[in-house]
Image (tube, rainbow, N blue to C red; front, side, top):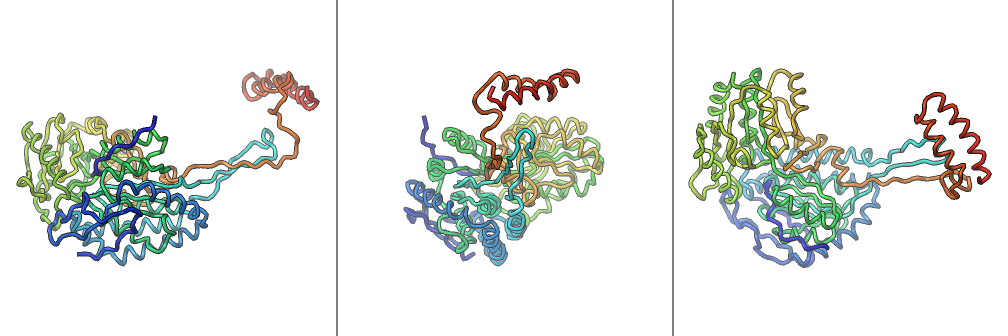
Length: 538
């Protein structure tokens, strides 16, 4: 029996003139769950119109009607329209960065480099390649067994895609699904996080005037709106966010037999080997841990360093961490709730014997969480077992690469891992033993910005795929078309079932490998005689 989806927790994986998003039917102006001030302080943020949960069904119905017509638009024309988003995105780069600074607390430079420029590449990639990626592909059919027949596979749009995204990258993450989903002929109903509704509205505004009404719609609100969206009969749910919320969505969709794409948490590790370029490894690890104030599914939340270089590596990481400038290099955390989770994990680790080397928890209530490094010996602490999603870097000394691989794979998360070494052949051999969906050698975390590279994980990191042609396996479904131009009145396997047909079936089994050479020769003789009888209807 199908049940109503319960309200979902917010999706956490995690001065600009902002264009308003298209208003949904039944929407009402309301402060709703939306914050009125950003984490970086400053002037109050603009008001946002909240979508009533009861209006979501109508939004989805309009999207479904619009999708049918949109799917009939030639792919080249769809690409031509959506390609215009690139120029709009780049022209509004300063506005977007300023909004992300105000609404999320990101440094301006980080906002531009992580959420504007990579998305220009993303639009180029998909609009240039989509025709080829959606092109029909032939299926080889044996002309003897299937005479006169030809088969082709086409990628068909799913229909209406529900997109629920988090607050940590509120421009980049939505666009990674919206762009290919629309190009594939889908309609998208997009629910941004209630923490960053203005960024969600801005994303939708980039498509203003380019799409038929209803093809891209925004539903603003909290978990009740997300639950209503799943209840509304969508054809695919794409979710990026926490494990807990992802599991609720998976259950709700399973009851409705609606496919899901879930990209959930991470507990990503860096494995630093004794033959690494120590300076590059230290700098890369510091950036990988503290970019976006650690609020990334790909943040380095564990470092396993080989004992031979551990002291020198840790000393350099601590020195580089202390050089980071608050508010310039590292922004504030976005939500008080997440800052409190990070504080609790850090305090528990220190109470359990971890050695604090840099940083530390801020005053209660502060979102200015300093970049923190600590040396840890035990892994039975939430800081090493749960997603942290904040600027804390635990370093563990291991005997060798074998121990580092074993500890990395022991986590229930498996999103990304980086290996730091000069031995590339060895690194590739080690990489094949990791569970992670993404493995980088001498770099970390940035590959989510590469439109041609799949971003995916296993375990509690989910199994969804964004970017690359592999993402189309989720945004489309294969449809097989067979045409038969043979003029015969029937097929060998059609009625009536006769003794001759039985002989043909078992003789073919022997001919195709079910008997030795002498048996195959005898079976061929049987086949010729049986085919003759079959033609006579015997």
